[in-house]
Image 1: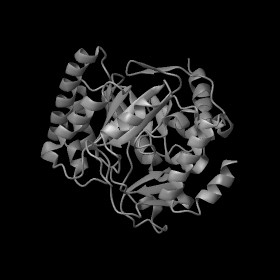
Image 2: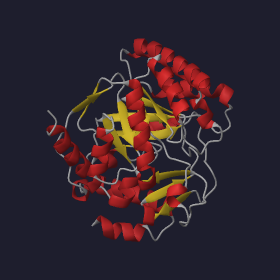
Image 3: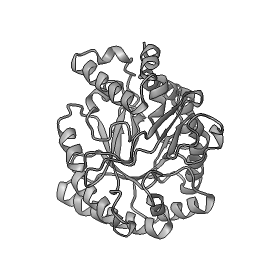
Image 4: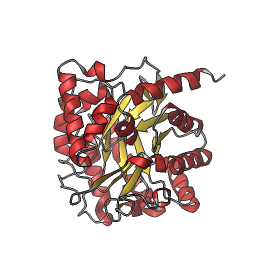
Length: 343
Protein backbone atom coordinates (compact mmCIF):
# COMPACT_ATOMS: atom_id res chain seq x y z
CA UNK A 1 0.00 0.00 0.00
CA UNK A 2 2.75 2.46 0.90
CA UNK A 3 4.55 1.96 -2.42
CA UNK A 4 1.48 3.31 -4.21
CA UNK A 5 1.20 6.28 -1.85
CA UNK A 6 4.92 6.97 -2.21
CA UNK A 7 4.70 7.08 -5.99
CA UNK A 8 1.97 9.70 -5.71
CA UNK A 9 3.75 11.73 -3.04
CA UNK A 10 7.03 11.70 -4.95
CA UNK A 11 5.32 13.53 -7.82
CA UNK A 12 4.84 16.51 -5.52
CA UNK A 13 7.28 19.04 -4.11
CA UNK A 14 9.02 17.32 -1.18
CA UNK A 15 7.91 19.78 1.49
CA UNK A 16 4.30 19.77 0.27
CA UNK A 17 4.31 15.96 0.23
CA UNK A 18 5.67 15.94 3.77
CA UNK A 19 2.72 18.01 4.99
CA UNK A 20 0.16 15.94 3.08
CA UNK A 21 1.53 12.67 4.44
CA UNK A 22 1.29 13.92 8.02
CA UNK A 23 -2.25 15.14 7.51
CA UNK A 24 -3.19 11.76 6.03
CA UNK A 25 -1.79 10.05 9.13
CA UNK A 26 -3.87 12.39 11.29
CA UNK A 27 -7.04 11.50 9.39
CA UNK A 28 -6.31 7.77 9.61
CA UNK A 29 -5.67 7.98 13.35
CA UNK A 30 -8.78 10.08 14.01
CA UNK A 31 -10.96 7.63 12.11
CA UNK A 32 -9.55 4.62 13.92
CA UNK A 33 -7.77 3.34 10.81
CA UNK A 34 -4.23 4.05 11.95
CA UNK A 35 -3.66 0.39 12.71
CA UNK A 36 -4.22 -0.49 9.05
CA UNK A 37 -1.16 1.53 8.00
CA UNK A 38 1.32 -0.55 9.94
CA UNK A 39 1.45 -3.60 12.16
CA UNK A 40 2.17 -2.48 15.72
CA UNK A 41 5.14 -4.42 17.05
CA UNK A 42 4.93 -6.43 20.22
CA UNK A 43 6.61 -4.76 23.18
CA UNK A 44 10.37 -4.99 23.52
CA UNK A 45 10.98 -3.18 26.84
CA UNK A 46 14.24 -1.26 26.89
CA UNK A 47 15.62 0.93 29.66
CA UNK A 48 17.89 3.93 29.11
CA UNK A 49 18.41 7.32 30.82
CA UNK A 50 16.31 6.01 33.69
CA UNK A 51 13.29 5.66 31.36
CA UNK A 52 11.44 2.48 30.41
CA UNK A 53 10.69 2.42 26.66
CA UNK A 54 8.11 0.03 25.20
CA UNK A 55 10.60 -0.67 22.42
CA UNK A 56 13.97 0.82 21.39
CA UNK A 57 12.86 2.29 18.02
CA UNK A 58 12.03 5.98 18.08
CA UNK A 59 11.19 8.80 15.71
CA UNK A 60 13.97 11.34 15.22
CA UNK A 61 13.38 15.05 15.59
CA UNK A 62 12.55 17.08 12.50
CA UNK A 63 9.56 15.21 11.15
CA UNK A 64 7.07 16.74 13.60
CA UNK A 65 8.61 20.08 14.49
CA UNK A 66 5.62 21.46 16.43
CA UNK A 67 4.22 18.29 18.07
CA UNK A 68 1.13 18.53 15.84
CA UNK A 69 0.99 14.84 14.84
CA UNK A 70 2.14 12.89 17.89
CA UNK A 71 -0.96 10.69 18.26
CA UNK A 72 -0.95 9.74 14.58
CA UNK A 73 2.77 8.93 14.60
CA UNK A 74 2.44 6.95 17.84
CA UNK A 75 -0.05 4.66 16.08
CA UNK A 76 2.84 3.41 13.92
CA UNK A 77 4.34 1.64 16.93
CA UNK A 78 7.24 3.85 17.98
CA UNK A 79 8.76 3.22 21.39
CA UNK A 80 9.36 6.95 21.73
CA UNK A 81 8.85 10.10 19.68
CA UNK A 82 11.10 13.15 19.55
CA UNK A 83 9.54 16.43 18.39
CA UNK A 84 11.15 19.73 17.41
CA UNK A 85 13.60 21.31 16.95
CA UNK A 86 11.80 24.13 18.78
CA UNK A 87 13.14 27.62 19.48
CA UNK A 88 12.11 30.35 21.92
CA UNK A 89 10.38 32.38 19.21
CA UNK A 90 8.62 31.26 16.04
CA UNK A 91 10.72 31.56 12.90
CA UNK A 92 10.04 30.76 9.22
CA UNK A 93 13.30 28.98 8.50
CA UNK A 94 15.17 29.29 5.22
CA UNK A 95 13.56 30.25 1.88
CA UNK A 96 11.90 27.55 -0.23
CA UNK A 97 12.69 25.26 -1.93
CA UNK A 98 14.60 23.76 0.99
CA UNK A 99 13.83 20.02 0.90
CA UNK A 100 15.11 17.73 -1.86
CA UNK A 101 14.79 13.99 -2.48
CA UNK A 102 17.53 11.85 -4.01
CA UNK A 103 15.62 8.58 -4.62
CA UNK A 104 18.52 6.77 -6.29
CA UNK A 105 20.43 7.17 -3.03
CA UNK A 106 17.45 6.80 -0.65
CA UNK A 107 18.44 10.21 0.67
CA UNK A 108 17.13 13.67 1.45
CA UNK A 109 18.84 17.05 1.58
CA UNK A 110 17.19 19.62 3.82
CA UNK A 111 18.05 23.19 4.70
CA UNK A 112 14.85 23.94 6.59
CA UNK A 113 16.61 26.01 9.24
CA UNK A 114 14.64 25.30 12.43
CA UNK A 115 11.33 26.43 10.90
CA UNK A 116 8.86 26.16 13.76
CA UNK A 117 5.99 27.91 15.55
CA UNK A 118 7.96 28.53 18.75
CA UNK A 119 8.20 26.63 22.01
CA UNK A 120 4.88 27.81 23.46
CA UNK A 121 2.99 26.57 20.38
CA UNK A 122 4.76 23.20 20.60
CA UNK A 123 3.77 22.87 24.26
CA UNK A 124 0.14 23.73 23.52
CA UNK A 125 0.07 20.96 20.92
CA UNK A 126 1.83 18.50 23.20
CA UNK A 127 -0.71 19.11 25.96
CA UNK A 128 -3.52 18.05 23.60
CA UNK A 129 -1.99 14.68 22.77
CA UNK A 130 -3.62 11.53 24.15
CA UNK A 131 -0.54 9.32 23.76
CA UNK A 132 1.10 8.47 27.08
CA UNK A 133 4.43 7.28 25.70
CA UNK A 134 7.88 8.87 25.98
CA UNK A 135 7.97 12.27 24.29
CA UNK A 136 11.39 13.77 23.71
CA UNK A 137 11.60 17.49 22.96
CA UNK A 138 14.50 18.78 20.86
CA UNK A 139 15.54 22.38 21.60
CA UNK A 140 17.62 24.91 19.66
CA UNK A 141 18.40 28.59 19.34
CA UNK A 142 16.80 31.22 17.15
CA UNK A 143 18.67 32.13 13.98
CA UNK A 144 19.20 35.76 15.07
CA UNK A 145 20.55 34.86 18.51
CA UNK A 146 24.35 35.24 18.50
CA UNK A 147 26.37 32.29 19.76
CA UNK A 148 27.55 34.34 22.75
CA UNK A 149 23.95 34.35 23.94
CA UNK A 150 22.91 30.92 22.67
CA UNK A 151 22.83 29.49 26.18
CA UNK A 152 19.99 31.90 26.99
CA UNK A 153 17.82 30.39 24.24
CA UNK A 154 18.55 26.83 25.38
CA UNK A 155 17.82 27.70 29.00
CA UNK A 156 14.57 29.41 27.98
CA UNK A 157 13.41 26.32 26.08
CA UNK A 158 14.52 23.92 28.82
CA UNK A 159 12.50 25.86 31.39
CA UNK A 160 9.41 25.83 29.16
CA UNK A 161 9.46 22.17 28.10
CA UNK A 162 10.74 20.56 31.29
CA UNK A 163 7.40 19.59 32.81
CA UNK A 164 6.06 18.00 29.60
CA UNK A 165 9.16 16.34 28.22
CA UNK A 166 10.14 12.74 28.87
CA UNK A 167 13.65 13.87 27.97
CA UNK A 168 15.19 16.97 26.36
CA UNK A 169 17.66 16.94 23.45
CA UNK A 170 20.10 19.81 22.95
CA UNK A 171 20.58 20.33 19.22
CA UNK A 172 23.86 22.08 18.38
CA UNK A 173 24.57 20.03 15.26
CA UNK A 174 22.16 21.15 12.53
CA UNK A 175 24.11 22.51 9.55
CA UNK A 176 21.24 24.83 8.60
CA UNK A 177 21.63 27.55 11.24
CA UNK A 178 24.79 29.56 10.60
CA UNK A 179 27.41 29.05 13.29
CA UNK A 180 25.37 26.55 15.29
CA UNK A 181 27.93 23.76 14.97
CA UNK A 182 30.55 26.04 16.54
CA UNK A 183 28.81 25.28 19.85
CA UNK A 184 30.29 21.77 19.60
CA UNK A 185 33.70 23.29 20.36
CA UNK A 186 35.14 22.24 23.72
CA UNK A 187 34.88 25.53 25.61
CA UNK A 188 31.46 26.49 24.25
CA UNK A 189 30.11 22.99 24.88
CA UNK A 190 31.44 22.86 28.43
CA UNK A 191 29.73 26.14 29.28
CA UNK A 192 26.44 25.22 27.56
CA UNK A 193 26.11 21.80 29.14
CA UNK A 194 27.22 23.07 32.53
CA UNK A 195 24.54 25.76 32.61
CA UNK A 196 21.84 23.43 31.28
CA UNK A 197 22.64 20.69 33.79
CA UNK A 198 22.70 23.20 36.65
CA UNK A 199 19.31 24.51 35.51
CA UNK A 200 18.00 20.95 35.29
CA UNK A 201 18.86 20.33 38.94
CA UNK A 202 16.89 23.41 39.95
CA UNK A 203 13.97 22.33 37.77
CA UNK A 204 14.11 18.80 39.18
CA UNK A 205 13.65 20.21 42.67
CA UNK A 206 10.80 22.42 41.54
CA UNK A 207 8.94 19.69 39.62
CA UNK A 208 9.89 16.69 41.72
CA UNK A 209 11.34 14.81 38.75
CA UNK A 210 14.79 14.70 37.16
CA UNK A 211 14.44 14.73 33.37
CA UNK A 212 17.28 13.39 31.20
CA UNK A 213 19.20 15.79 28.95
CA UNK A 214 20.73 14.41 25.75
CA UNK A 215 23.17 16.01 23.32
CA UNK A 216 22.93 15.55 19.53
CA UNK A 217 26.17 15.82 17.57
CA UNK A 218 27.18 16.02 13.90
CA UNK A 219 28.70 13.21 11.85
CA UNK A 220 31.33 15.55 10.36
CA UNK A 221 33.59 15.88 13.42
CA UNK A 222 37.19 14.71 13.29
CA UNK A 223 38.86 12.52 15.90
CA UNK A 224 40.28 15.40 17.91
CA UNK A 225 36.87 17.08 18.05
CA UNK A 226 35.22 13.83 19.13
CA UNK A 227 37.92 13.36 21.78
CA UNK A 228 37.17 16.81 23.16
CA UNK A 229 33.41 16.20 23.20
CA UNK A 230 33.92 12.88 24.99
CA UNK A 231 36.01 14.64 27.67
CA UNK A 232 33.34 17.28 28.19
CA UNK A 233 30.59 14.65 28.39
CA UNK A 234 32.54 12.51 30.84
CA UNK A 235 32.95 15.50 33.17
CA UNK A 236 29.32 16.65 32.84
CA UNK A 237 25.99 15.52 34.25
CA UNK A 238 24.60 14.89 30.75
CA UNK A 239 22.47 11.74 30.45
CA UNK A 240 22.92 10.59 26.87
CA UNK A 241 24.26 11.24 23.38
CA UNK A 242 22.54 11.07 19.97
CA UNK A 243 24.83 10.08 17.09
CA UNK A 244 24.19 11.77 14.66
CA UNK A 245 22.57 14.64 12.82
CA UNK A 246 22.77 15.10 9.02
CA UNK A 247 26.03 15.49 7.10
CA UNK A 248 27.38 18.23 4.85
CA UNK A 249 29.63 15.70 3.09
CA UNK A 250 28.65 15.04 -0.56
CA UNK A 251 31.14 12.41 -1.76
CA UNK A 252 28.57 9.59 -1.62
CA UNK A 253 26.14 11.42 -3.92
CA UNK A 254 28.58 13.11 -6.31
CA UNK A 255 26.95 13.73 -9.69
CA UNK A 256 23.40 13.14 -8.47
CA UNK A 257 20.61 15.60 -9.10
CA UNK A 258 20.42 18.05 -6.17
CA UNK A 259 23.87 16.99 -4.92
CA UNK A 260 25.02 20.60 -5.04
CA UNK A 261 22.14 21.89 -2.90
CA UNK A 262 23.27 23.19 0.48
CA UNK A 263 21.90 21.63 3.64
CA UNK A 264 22.09 18.43 5.63
CA UNK A 265 22.17 15.08 3.84
CA UNK A 266 20.27 12.20 5.48
CA UNK A 267 19.37 8.66 4.51
CA UNK A 268 21.55 5.84 3.21
CA UNK A 269 24.64 7.99 2.41
CA UNK A 270 25.04 9.01 6.06
CA UNK A 271 24.72 5.49 7.50
CA UNK A 272 28.40 4.53 7.54
CA UNK A 273 29.56 7.96 8.70
CA UNK A 274 27.05 8.20 11.54
CA UNK A 275 27.66 4.61 12.62
CA UNK A 276 31.42 5.20 12.75
CA UNK A 277 30.87 8.22 15.00
CA UNK A 278 28.55 6.13 17.18
CA UNK A 279 31.10 3.32 17.54
CA UNK A 280 33.88 5.81 18.20
CA UNK A 281 31.94 7.55 20.94
CA UNK A 282 31.11 4.20 22.54
CA UNK A 283 34.82 3.41 22.66
CA UNK A 284 35.61 6.80 24.16
CA UNK A 285 32.80 6.82 26.72
CA UNK A 286 32.64 3.18 27.71
CA UNK A 287 29.32 1.96 29.06
CA UNK A 288 28.59 4.94 31.32
CA UNK A 289 26.51 6.96 28.86
CA UNK A 290 23.53 5.62 26.87
CA UNK A 291 23.78 6.32 23.13
CA UNK A 292 21.08 6.74 20.49
CA UNK A 293 21.98 5.65 16.96
CA UNK A 294 20.39 7.57 14.11
CA UNK A 295 21.31 8.11 10.48
CA UNK A 296 20.55 5.98 7.45
CA UNK A 297 18.34 3.29 9.00
CA UNK A 298 16.33 1.91 6.08
CA UNK A 299 15.75 -1.63 7.36
CA UNK A 300 15.96 -3.93 10.32
CA UNK A 301 19.57 -4.87 9.59
CA UNK A 302 20.56 -1.21 9.77
CA UNK A 303 18.92 -0.85 13.18
CA UNK A 304 20.74 -3.98 14.37
CA UNK A 305 24.06 -2.57 13.11
CA UNK A 306 23.52 0.56 15.21
CA UNK A 307 22.99 -1.60 18.31
CA UNK A 308 26.13 -3.59 17.45
CA UNK A 309 28.03 -0.30 17.18
CA UNK A 310 27.04 0.61 20.72
CA UNK A 311 23.58 2.17 20.61
CA UNK A 312 21.03 1.54 23.34
CA UNK A 313 18.19 3.01 21.25
CA UNK A 314 17.75 3.92 17.59
CA UNK A 315 15.78 6.58 15.72
CA UNK A 316 14.46 6.76 12.15
CA UNK A 317 13.25 9.57 9.91
CA UNK A 318 14.35 9.47 6.24
CA UNK A 319 13.79 5.72 6.21
CA UNK A 320 10.08 6.34 6.80
CA UNK A 321 9.95 8.41 3.62
CA UNK A 322 11.42 5.61 1.53
CA UNK A 323 10.16 2.51 3.35
CA UNK A 324 6.92 3.69 4.94
CA UNK A 325 5.27 2.92 8.29
CA UNK A 326 6.20 -0.78 8.19
CA UNK A 327 9.80 0.17 8.88
CA UNK A 328 9.09 0.57 12.60
CA UNK A 329 7.89 -3.00 13.17
CA UNK A 330 10.64 -4.35 10.92
CA UNK A 331 13.28 -2.68 13.08
CA UNK A 332 11.71 -3.86 16.34
CA UNK A 333 11.53 -7.41 14.98
CA UNK A 334 15.19 -7.33 13.95
CA UNK A 335 16.26 -6.00 17.35
CA UNK A 336 14.16 -8.61 19.14
CA UNK A 337 15.95 -11.36 17.23
CA UNK A 338 19.35 -9.74 17.76
CA UNK A 339 18.95 -9.07 21.48
CA UNK A 340 17.32 -12.45 22.08
CA UNK A 341 20.30 -14.19 20.51
CA UNK A 342 22.75 -12.59 22.91
CA UNK A 343 23.95 -14.64 25.91
